Image 1 (cartoon, rainbow over the protein chains, first blue to last red):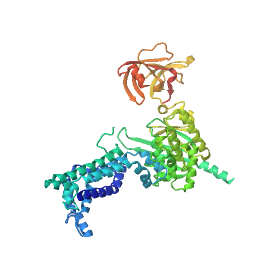
Image 2: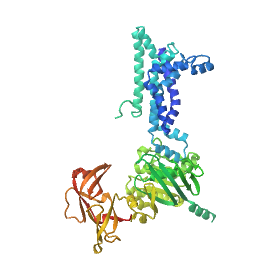
Image 3: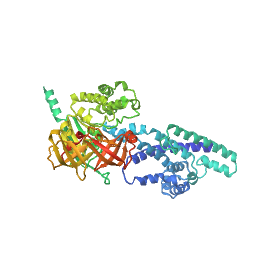
Image 4: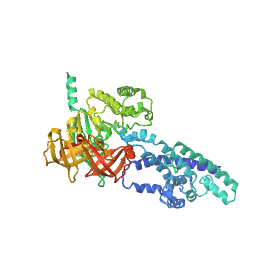
Amino acid sequence: MQALWLSLCLAFCVAAILLVVGTPLAYWLSQTRWRGKFLIESVIALPLVLPPTVLGFYLLVVMGTDGPLGKLWTAWFGHTLAFTFAGLIVASVLYSLPFAVQPLVMAFESVDTRLLDAGAILGAGRWRIFRQILLPLSLPGVITAAVLSFAHTLGEFGVVLMVGGNIPGVTRTVSIDIYDHVQSLDYAAANRMAIALVFISFAVLSTIYAVNRRVWSPWPTK
Amino acid sequence: MANEVSAASAIRAATLEAQFRFKRPGHAAGAFELSVDFQIDSGITILFGPSGSGKSTLLDCIAGLLKPGSARIALNGEILQDSATHIFLSPQQRRLAYLFQSPALFPHLTVEQNVSFGLNNSNEGDREGRVQDLLAAFRVEHLARRRPGQISGGEAQRVALARSLVTSPRALLLDEPLKGLDSELKSAIFDDLRAWNRVRQLPILYVTHQRDEVDALGERVIAIDRGQIIAQGAPHSVLDAPRKKRLAYAAGFENHLSAVVLDVRESDGVMRVRLAGSETELEVPLGYAAAGTRVHIAIRAGDILLAARKPEGLSARNILDGAIDSLDVMGTTVVCRVNAGAMFLVHVTPGALRSLGLVPGQRVWLVIKTHSCHLVEE
């Protein structure tokens, strides 16, 4: 159960961070007319196509004792970033970034620009337009982004294994726990964890599809 | 006394001057250039022109939603934009009211919250009073607690008007805000708008391409086509006698034909003309033209009847034999191109298309009344 609790903690932290980081990023992507925008979009979408081991490998190199981020982290906190819970969070945030940013961009772009124009004509500044018009009208997208990044982080395996290793209570997430149990032929224990994950994932997904069927759903809307 | 003087000078000072060029870059079809220079005073000025003539773009430039490259726009003497001195006031700073084609009400706020949105900076009591005044002026007090999704289209436009006027704007820009409403509802809203402006005397620029709105509202008309102002003045002088070919286009004439006068029948009040480059003849109303001179004729696509068999026993003097070149369904109108010596555009309903079983290549007859043919100058 320790592994499950750890995974839930990790997924919760990652979803929260992604909302804070992803919202301004998605807002910028939805508003900018910069021609190079597609480059940023591609970088954000990379984790969708790369094998988790590739992302995990480079993260390990960057976060390791000799890596730039690892050195910085060690200088500040006195220990390395790799093989820690904080390291897992950093890796998972990058890994789940597209799952937060894409539904947010979709939601922001689907708001009628004439509503934003109307706000500006009525004297509202950019921040007030964002807070009182754009964000409330994008709420289904915000919920989708939070739930998808939570669910995606909960189920990750490859990146965690590469960056976190397998330290009980620190980096041993539920998917690694299941893998471990199967390796030691303890199918009963593996099944307990696996079934818990199936139920949690189902609950989470049915929440978003119930909330809205429009923003970023792999299923047709009609 | 002092009040009267200042009121008078305030009225005199209520002018909106705009002079700008706006280029939308793009390839052949997408490229568009708007180049205008006009001044409007207090009261309602109609900006009239066909779809795609640049009317909405023009309003967006005045409101500051678009930034024309070379511009001088001033309201009551205050510069809103001057490209020479790099002044560009944001839409927030301009204090204008702008009503779009759609009401654009904030769907997550109630009618009351929508109307008070523009009063963010005033204190609570003030705000409440102003909102109630405007809701009452446009007869929507009873909807205060509803959301935009729960009111009708006409009510939504009334709320949108109230919302844009609550901020005490200095000028009004209205972009076909009453599109799709029936004429009774329209004239009721016009009356309320006029009553509201009677004391304020703001300059109002009202965009439309519908004649009935021009007749109901207009004190002055600016006709625009393909990004250019082509005429301005009193409504009937600008629109009733389309004197310029381009204005005829703006006033809704889809067919422009060049012709030579064959003979003039003064006593019947008609003359016969032959269309340039063909043998097709038309009977048109008498104009100041002698036999042998060139004239231009404008005919509305909706004024031409289409028959699948040769019609007989009609009063219409012009029955032309032709063949369908193409059929395009555009919403509830079918645009039919018919080759009858010259190419004619004819509008028919989808129902007529079905019941006549029209197909490209089919032989058809065009029926045109003499007085549906309008003589226009080049």
